Amino acid sequence: MEQEPVTQAPLWVFGYGSLIWDPGFPVVERRIARLDGWHRSFCMRSIHHRGTPDAPGLVLALDRAAGATCTGVAFRVAPGEEGGTLANLRERELVSSAYLETVLTLRTDSGPMDAVTYVIDPDHVQYCGGLAMDEQARIIARAVGGRGPNRDYLWSTAAHLAELGIADPDLEWLAAQVRRLT
Image (cartoon, rainbow, N blue to C red; front, side, top):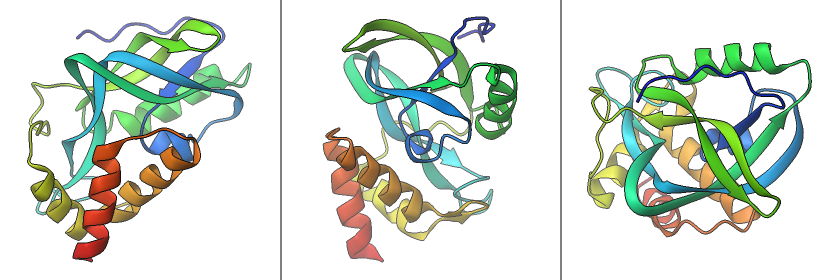
């Protein structure tokens, strides 16, 4: 998937993991949004933020799958902050090139919209789609990286999804299982 240039205004960004609870940029509007053809998954080994090269953690990514859907949050960036926001997001999300920055169409109650979205590169060495849920829980329970324990990332994401009324049974199961393991 080739990176597309971002030239749209207003600038919307799709959050499905930590961006939901820590966007890191000035937001003027939030909308619950759905992305079809992709699912939220702990399919990326984290060697920077939630793990290390010697003991990788797992972070969420959007993994393409027929019939899948992912519900998250679309954020509208404050006018005039688009350039700085993209620079900061690229520094944060593209640290190892495992994510691809693309513009995808989201569905909202207000209609469709295009948003900058970070998806996994399935050809990248950090991609690990298809790990068993028990294995994911064991990795998340022990991993720690530059931004802290992997389990905190999971628990915060699961809690914020629940607060927004967004059901994600896999994350709910993982959060409970990791609590049992720690």
